[in-house]
Image 1 (tube, helix red, strand yellow):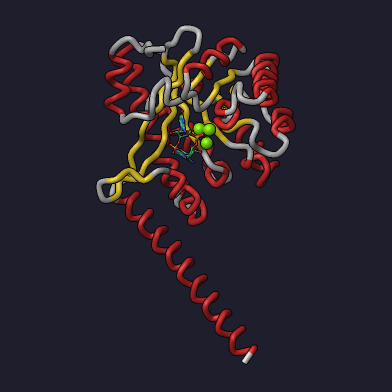
Image 2 (cartoon, rainbow, N blue to C red):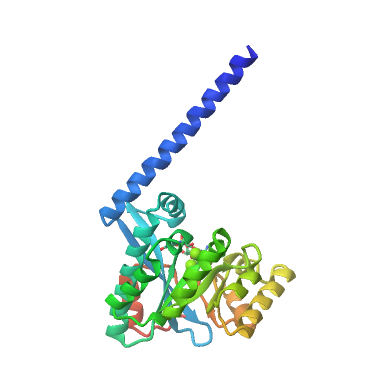
Length: 281
Ligand code: C2E
Ligand code: MG
Ligand code: MG
Ligand code: MG
């Protein structure tokens, strides 16, 4: 009887795993179809200079238009990475965002930059650097208009190769940012392996600013470190005026967050850059 029970559990477990795998495969098929159907869209979140309150850049953030809803990237980037779809999807994202930014720069004459998130699968894919160079050329954009944001995992999963590819990208003139800085294992070590132009302080630090002395001290230390190494420091996830005040007092030069502006569709950016490009801060 014992064995039967165990077998039953095992079957149940197998059925559960099977359902999970099938669910994953269905999602991957849906994602592939979505790319073919042009069902992905980009929103752009402004990045501002905290001293002048002017928009200096936008970060492209992908969404999936599904049944009249916008599905957030946290629900589909991981399966897109697993299936390899992230490579063509990432190329679509890069081209779409670069085309838009080229138009905005052309029509306004403003020096607005673009940040794009990339995942390790893209970095390690063959022809990655050529693809980026090709898209920049197509859009007639200088390489230094583009910043590629990687999180620290990129450097953990396949350190040697990923670092080499990113160094090639940087040789093209593309800027590199470490996203979610401070969250990964051994954040500081990565700054030795690779020339980085920008660090983006993870939202969790900004959320807890002022609440607890340690977080404030760590944030101040990250800001100083970035400055001393000649890097741009950008705070993510600014939601409250007191966080903004603290960051300004600590000398953080750039910021992003719902208080400044939420991610918005392309026509929202057009209205913003067509106007003053100064936010209400
Ligand atoms: P991320 O690169 O760290 O992007 C910032 C995320 O924080 C965005 O979420 C943004 O909407 C959100 N955010 C901005 N300001 C605030 C704030 O004040 N408060 C709070 N609570 N959240 C804020 P989103 O768009 O859902 O993207 C989540 C993550 O998905 C991104 O984190 C990035 O790692 C990934 N992702 C987004 N777009 C792409 C893409 O095109 N390619 C790749 N590979 N990954 C992407
Ligand atoms: Mg990012
Ligand atoms: Mg990211
Ligand atoms: Mg981030």
